[in-house]
Image 1: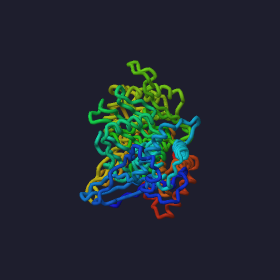
Image 2: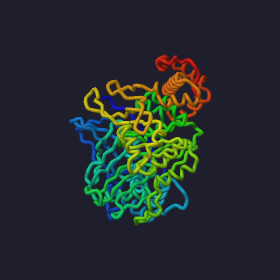
Image 3: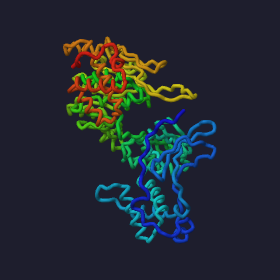
Image 4: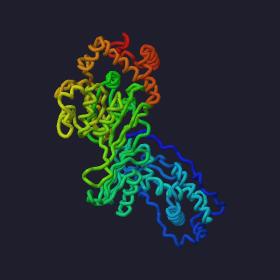
Length: 564
């Protein structure tokens, strides 16, 4: 199987811009050792790195994550198992001694800046001042490597820094002491890595460091920590053996700076054009929706993409325990819960999802988006939906029936009379499918899209056919569309034509290679304002590319104007 095309991390300059001037003399390790006799008294600490690639393993892919110091390597064993290697430039013994001396000096002399600065640049500047203060002149090549590891271990994520920089890594898992770290890779899925932390003190220091970076406290008294790391990455960690018998653990779910849009869902075949067009039309008509699925199915990803279908002037309020939703939307308020400051049962200072949903109701949102409902906040959300607010959320459930049952059960206790106010239920799953070369690969699909008709009744609008990997529509008798037709004095036929037209618009946008929210949203907004003009342009450009417009439009044809 051909390796997938991966996103490459941007190369970084070398040597470091703050490095001392290079020496012209020989810069071998022996020469450095002769020059710096005082290093004999320094306790040498080599920076922690992963194991090297075995000679018998085949390199499948290699790309920079922090060039020229760190590279990600996907290697394959003779038995065809794959592993992720973080390949970092090694230090010689003398370079390690200078690195150790520099870390000790920085820890003793580094001061907190009074104004906001770039931490990496500030660190590099202070490191250079210390070397000049003690008249230490290091060759440029050695300095670049030393400052790389010093930055990594003092202001970066330590041994995890290279993986945190890799744009292809979705999450990292430290499962236990003396066990390999695992990553989930966009191209190669779950992979064992060449990093194993066996020293208990080193592991505890890493968990403490990550907790402090997230602005949280962790100890044997409070051994569980949840927080947001710099870069808005989500951290869940346990400390020592208080609740995890095999030692400290950590899971980091990386935050995507460039949010996924509805076009990305089409590119990933998570849904097809008709599902996207149908959803777009209903979202414009203030539909409410819930995304259900298991852990790792892609619920939040799909929720984020659905929000990109909203109008630009829509007021959005999102509520989460840890921020995961990323909407490049100007009229957007993001709220996150806060844990209690107190160590007592009163939980003084705690701000939960329930309080945030109540507060958000007073902000007059057009759409209230809750990252995940699991408790009493669901009741308040459905109260908002019942009063005409748009509502979006995710829920752990296997299908629509189990989702509705969870909503009316403890601890959510949503009254059955409120359930019909919910319009759509997206059921998304992560599925393992066989590959032509043998083995399996994971795909994510919207396996069902249902309309909620009653407390225990749903009408299926789309279903996924696993044999053909296609989506079968059945929304011609949609109760929600019939209600829109009745309320607006239009026919179901005109609504069907409008959904087909929007499917063509989405196909045209995808064909043009547009996926970024800042480019996508103005086009969607333009179509709502001038539908005939945009539709004609899209049709002409698709036909010029040899794409059959009639096939996209389906049985309803391309005649007729847009449905309001």
